[in-house]
Image 1 (cartoon, rainbow, N blue to C red):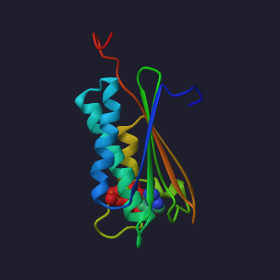
Image 2: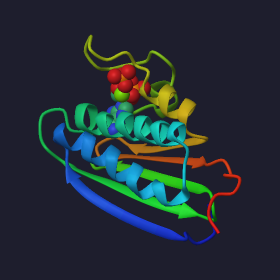
Image 3: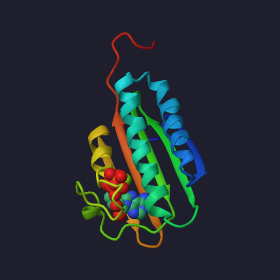
Length: 149
Ligand SMILES: Nc1ncnc2c1ncn2[C@@H]1O[C@H](COP(=O)(O)OP(=O)(O)OP(=O)(O)O)[C@@H](O)[C@H]1O
Ligand SMILES: [Mg+2]
């Protein structure tokens, strides 16, 4: 997206699983200024939860690392969410994004990226092995009739 964001916020936090709820709620609070529906808020929370969980579980498997959550608003209705880590990276992004593909244990179903793609309009993944992964997700929210002046 080339135009300048109308608003932006960023948070950095450690890859502790207790921060997954923090990140999800922070994203929802930031998106609230666009007057989203409850469904839209839940979609954003779910997508952020999947992306942040991937950083916690896969990017930093044996150590704590830093995760960046950057939230942007474009125009009157579009939210862009970047979740970035400096962890192990993904050797083959196309393969990793296929439904049911997982390198995780039996607790993982390989559906995280598929869930992000189904709840957001666009999901872009950039990754370099040994350097980290950046997941950028955008969602255009429905115009609310009578909402806001
Ligand atoms: N931030 C990341 N860093 C390194 N590898 C990642 C990252 N995110 C995803 N991956 C890789 O992509 C695979 C697919 O991720 P996806 O979220 O779709 O499934 P999963 O995490 O394995 O399972 P689920 O999300 O259903 O619990 C992961 O198994 C992992 O190999
Ligand atoms: Mg996952």
